[in-house]
Image (cartoon, rainbow, N blue to C red; front, top):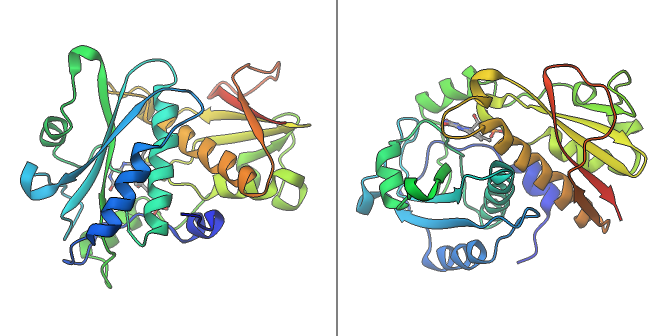
Length: 274
Ligand SMILES: Cc1cc2nc3c(=O)[nH]c(=O)nc-3n(C[C@H](O)[C@H](O)[C@H](O)COP(=O)(O)O)c2cc1C
């Protein structure tokens, strides 16, 4: 199914209050087929499963009315957070295009129940980095959801100029100065992130864009995985998918450029237009 990527990125928001209406079987079938063929530029397999909340006693304290979840797991190896975030966001955008609402959950869920349902094999270093409910958005947000959105300022994003730079971190640029990358960077700017921390910092350099992560120690150093790298995987997906929707192909490279950067930033990856 073709869909308008930029429209879905602009329209999507985390939903935590659902209608009691079950997800249509034909919609679930489409989603299932999509999840089976998802991939990522790191070549790391991510396994998705659609889970019935009642069957596996799955709950989340921040949700109301959900009855189906999507979980995913990956072997915890270098780049696995990036691969996971990339694929999970592709799933969320496709779900949005199918009329289904989602919210990524890394912590506010009954993790043991979800890990059991996902058959997470700790001995094989498998990690379930996120789950999400899928369903139809309720007309009105629950009080819990309203409070949650307020506490993370879910409707806000920092200024474009704070995340986008040209050639070095000394020169920030606005949307109008971002040239052929403007829309792709704007889509990164709108992406979801854990507690809305928006860790992405991008440096435009000729035909390349370098991605850095603004380190928040309590998110980066979580025992299960670096959740900010999951955020960065989401950002990479928004960037690459937007470029590709505009007919521009780009190649992912992981080769740190000789740029000096503030200490709180970590180089992640670059895209090069090909
Ligand atoms: C990696 C990641 C983990 C998240 N974990 C949670 C979570 O545990 N609980 C929750 O309620 N929201 C969680 N969120 C949702 C964010 O709070 C939300 O994306 C952010 O506040 C921006 O709001 P928006 O998605 O409506 O644009 C997570 C989002 C991401 C990307």
